[in-house]
Image (cartoon, rainbow, N blue to C red; front, top):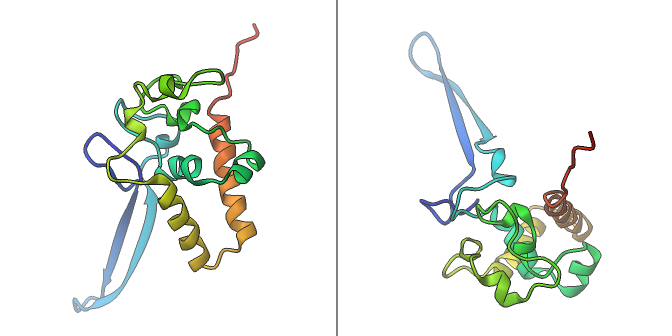
Length: 157
């Protein structure tokens, strides 16, 4: 889920239910298909929106050891994909936390503790059967996605 201008916890997924009936009109069966509504959510958000919650949870909740292992910055605003509708990140190496907090209100949701939610996400992944190694791989992949968002491609012609 992600924060939009209308909802702090908007689902980015949809469900399509197909119901089959016999010629007599009785129910024959049903099929439910889940699909991603917004593939663009990862790379861009409108002003005041925030990306998928898990990116913010990862930065807020990862331990210092995990941040070092996954090469994560301490401030989510360092990542373009979490710029909250701004075209470039608000902070980079050498900028103070106070500088990074100005104008970054879309990264925070009142009443939501992203660090706590990170722990809940880890517990949920364990409950569905993922090992600690698999969970670390998920978060390592998310960290890589954040870094890919900061890659800039230049035209060399």
